Image 1 (cartoon, each protein chain N blue to C red):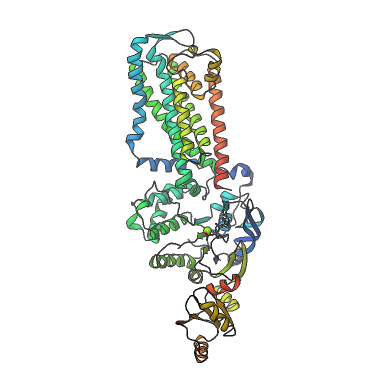
Image 2: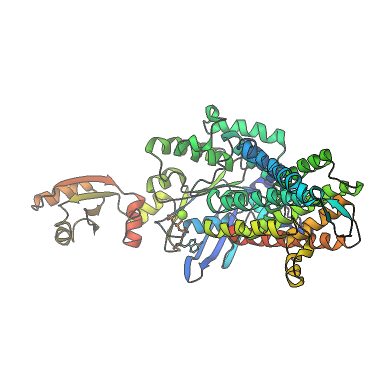
Length: 318
Length: 277
Ligand SMILES: Nc1ncnc2c1ncn2[C@@H]1O[C@H](COP(=O)(O)OP(=O)(O)OP(=O)(O)O)[C@@H](O)[C@H]1O
Ligand SMILES: [Mg+2]
């Protein structure tokens, strides 16, 4: 029985601990003191707009960028001193693919496995497994340059899994892909999550964060604005529903002013006015009774986008 | 893929810590990658490097040699002109092969292909990448040199049994140029800067006592020529293939070893600065 206890104990200790993590490039503060922990098997997200410091944080976790100050432990080790040991346990999917274009699809996996010191036989079996996992069996001998964006992304993920990593780092895994390709990718990542792989991912898509993350931090300008599960963040920082009203570009601001007291809170964007409320339809009826005539109206559930807007006053995707 | 197996904490090998973060002892995987990549490249370009020195040897050694006749080698021995320039062409072949792979190819990989970024995200260290890539360049240089050496043997231009030591000598030459080539390339940012390398290589090839003895230069110029790595290489190889060997050749060996060590150090540092900042 003691075996069970040991497992329990290791499961509960975090695989990533960051506290007051800072990265400066000269004058530029890319990451300005962030603290978070990631538990084994957890799926953890960094959600933030361009330039928030997501990639920089990922690179520090990936032990390819040294921190300026603060504490960082990956699998209990300091990446400054144990870079190779840590990297041997990580799978990395960088923001832009850096596949080896001089090699064929399957060769990319073979060679990558060899970089980790895996044997030829081991690498070969693993490559076939992962080609199947990434639904790329038919493309085994294809040139990397002939793959579609979604296929390249899947190959990059397969490559990151060659060494059977304990943590998979995904920097904007689906940016630039069409909806169908994104769904295929999410499905693959979901499987990994079910198998217990720890996922750390960055994204600026709220739906992606909602789909994949057990817990996430909202980052902006190198700092953490909020932390929690997608649903708890929405509960804490937004209302249940949102009423979106469009009055035409030149009238939105003016109408927002007149709507000041509607719902729990009103947010004016250039193209629309958002009314936060528990009951969207009810609020719309009230406003229509009061003589408001929006060109279009829409009631939807609150999302992380609203959380971000609330926290920073800006949209997530500019 | 389960995250729950292998939960044992990472056990760092503290004993070889300092070197361990730079070197995983797996340069062979980098060579393996290079081999796979080369397999599918244009072999015509690769093979042309074998014929270039042969054409020089035929046109200059045989053609011009007919006019020149014999030349006086370092130790006063009179040797045929072809036997004089052949070792120089041999050293140059080793240099060219090594430099081609370690400069243009490496430049492309650093600036455009982001190959090393990918490698250094694995458990490889910068020393593995440097040793692997330099070995590949070295192998290419050595390949050219060995092919040329066989031609020399067939035409009877290896004048002594010492010529057998010419093989390790050209390996050293290729190693030294490959290391330094990669080190210098890691600082290059643009194609214009890369052109400087060609700009240096051609005059060095023509001036390093390749086609005529060093003694044709006035003494101050001689000193400058002697400082050139290709002159050091040519002298080393020429002593061996012509059999005029003295303890003095150890200085050439030392020069090339130092050059290789410098190149390796610079390359490792730069890879670290570029990809593990
Ligand atoms: N190597 C570098 N040198 C200088 N500044 C850098 C470097 N890398 C990142 N930065 C700066 O640090 C800040 C954060 O960049 P980072 O790439 O981490 O953002 P991000 O959240 O990943 O953004 P994106 O969504 O656009 O990928 C930016 O202001 C960026 O210009
Ligand atoms: Mg980024």
